[in-house]
Length: 215
Image (cartoon, rainbow, N blue to C red; front, top):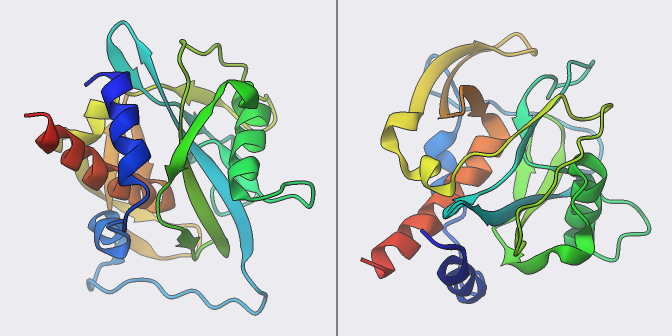
């Protein structure tokens, strides 16, 4: 997998209908009885953006994920895509994703070429509508993690997402008291599950299309 043909493919593919919920549900955590969790929120959902940033290093296409520090919140300690909540100064959710990524991992937003986005994704646990933005950067980025928001940055290969041996299932004691049977990606010995895994699952569907087109 090389960055240039991948970027060309994504630029055209992201203009078309996306796999959406069908792909998301492949990594959906469920209760032990097999049913999904339903969240009730009195407030209107908030908006946010995350960045899936592809770059090439030593011939390998990679992307950064962050490990959140422990804090009093539903996503404490989890692996996530860099991103966050939309601010009033953001013109759209693409700008949100770029700004938040710059703040969290130190990648200058002006150096990122935006190719498009995946399907908008509702995160029930935190009541957010998230837009996963796809971008590329034509050099190996130097990461500068924000010490308040990022415990660690990991940089798996894009092909790791396609490795079936890295897709596993584990029981999780969620903070809301539920015991979940959760599919996850095992990436660089980190467990990537929940909303992030579900968004990445749609990315996997598109990466599989790319791989099929270049066989």
